[in-house]
Amino acid sequence: MKPPVLMIGNFLSASGWTVTPCEEIAGRLSASGWEVHTSSDKPARARRLLDMVTAVVLLRHEYAVATVDVFSGYAFFWAEAVCASLRAVGRPYVLVLHGGMLPDFSRRWPRRVRRLLRSAAAVVAPSG
Image (cartoon, rainbow, N blue to C red; front, side, top):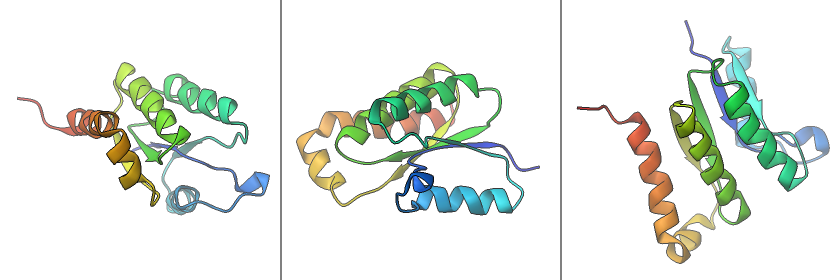
């Protein structure tokens, strides 16, 4: 049995945006029989963040693992907020790093980037 997945990223193609890799993968997984939940298709930034965090919390019993797209800029904050929510509800997650600006962003904000990467490693690392 395939575990259900929550995919957090930009699912904005219905609003006229380009189909993202996250959208493409979600569609392919779903077509292959996976149960896939996605967030967010909200074009407005604040609504998108709220939708992402709400999906993490409200759907927490409906997925086994989450993927979180990570971009630089404002979107990095979204990833931080989503991952904090995932940790709060005890769900494992995988980070999917995107964008050519992440190296520059990590040089400007090294502690934030290290903290986010370490948080994902701690969630999936075996204990003991």
